[in-house]
Image (cartoon, rainbow, N blue to C red; front, top):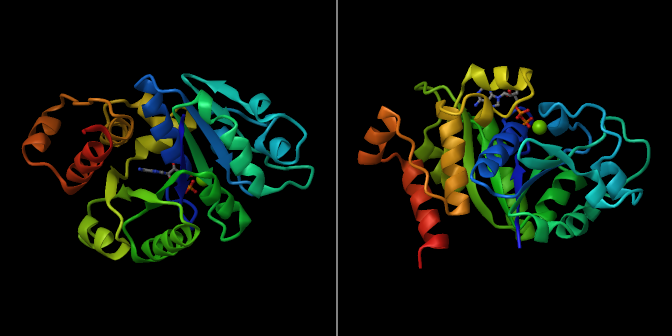
Length: 265
Ligand SMILES: Nc1ncnc2c1ncn2[C@@H]1O[C@H](COP(=O)(O)OP(=O)(O)O)[C@@H](O)[C@H]1O
Ligand SMILES: [Mg+2]
């Protein structure tokens, strides 16, 4: 039975869709069966990231009972995608997402849901449909404030939060540190993703960054997260990875603890 993981933040532009695509592609590269679902119903762009432009069957058609969820799945290289309509024509019920996604759980190892940032039933749909959540944040006070609000919302609904993806890190002194973010949010940082203009470049080619630049720091970090979630061994052999293994960063330690808690008996 697959795991449904919602990728959440109550702020746009922090990297939810990028994380869904990059993590999904990384899981697929480990041979996992992966489905990505666009649940940003008002402002969808998961399909656009993957060159699925103006799809004629979408999550909106699934949620207004026009089609079966199975018929809304598009094949990308190595994984499935359910896109959303940019201009949906009929009313739909976001809260049917949980039931529709549940029907696909037996077919996939991982179903990743790209959430809306809106504080309404759209975000609630992701929280309710997910077995667990990742929150995405950038290292600044305004985003962290919204991240904490998202965490509180998820906790109120009883959906566990597995970890925080800290994205677009410039490595500047004025940014919040990983330790500050963990202390304030009380959620372990399981991925520490640098800001890298090649992420934007990969999107201009409609290719997941983990496929486009497989050895970049961004890609390696998403692959390490994917490995820890799926119980795979992944030891990249770049010089800096060898040094890092001798003196692991906090996110490495968090991933190791998570991996052991799930896969080592
Ligand atoms: N690590 C990163 N480095 C550089 N740009 C990034 C990174 N992650 C995301 N971006 C860019 O930030 C923008 C917003 O990302 P997106 O994933 O669409 O955010 P969200 O889904 O949270 O609104 C996109 O243009 C994306 O290319
Ligand atoms: Mg998005």
